[in-house]
Length: 351
Image (cartoon, rainbow, N blue to C red; front, top):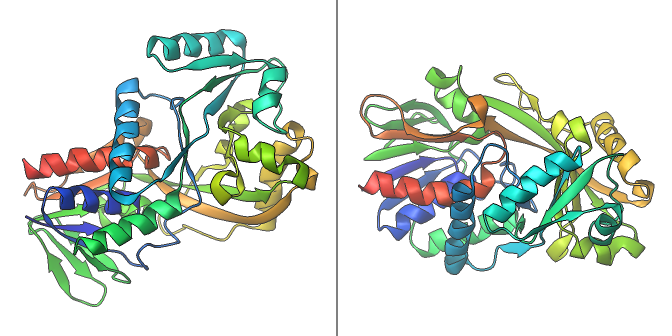
């Protein structure tokens, strides 16, 4: 079976890997280079942890298992740092802690003193508390993209960079390219991230896009070792929804504010982060990071991700032929599920 994949972000590359393992013929198209450093999934690190809203332990266990399977093919790609999640009160934390323990996930409550011992220079808001899990950490996203491309090329898979797709015909199925050519396959899967809604106008009312700002920092020398040992952290700062990643394996400290992940209408995926946006993000962290003024800002960036109603992850056919599919949604949490989604979809397409 020949499968054409539109988009070489993590979903497109992971699907190409899963289909290749099942001995299908695969062609991957991307409008930029492959791997594309402008894709949302091309970053120093992405987080994986057990604190995702509206998910159960089964998909999360499958996600961890799928990354282990992928690493057997492409090499080490995950650093287990542990994960810390903030809560507005002890009652909320206790409910989650009991759930984690019911699922046999090693976890413990952290008071202010214990938090200071594992997460340098991050303070809880008054009355808040935190839970730390043993599993969870960072996926080395840019390395994953490079290693996947190397593996796919080694397997003889055709990658076509700088190949923009203008239209998807789900009935043939076919992709019309910007240069006028048409690419066909037995199956066509669109994995174009935030641009999926532009290629599939019938889903423009269902699929959305959000823009997330990220700031990368170099900690002061006296905190460098502590940050290299630190866990990933999520859900700090109440409604601000602060989250971040440590400087493990040569990466920088990464900070983000969930409240700043704002919807973007079609045609407005502005990639430039202004100084005012960087200052606003750091301003949310200043009350919680007493020494933030001693950090050096390395860079800021914006990434864009697809969204779907109620945070659902969509992996489904479209059109009447049953030969055209798309993968989108999950509101920014989709990276951690990419290999699991790929293995599942490859099995469905091959059945």
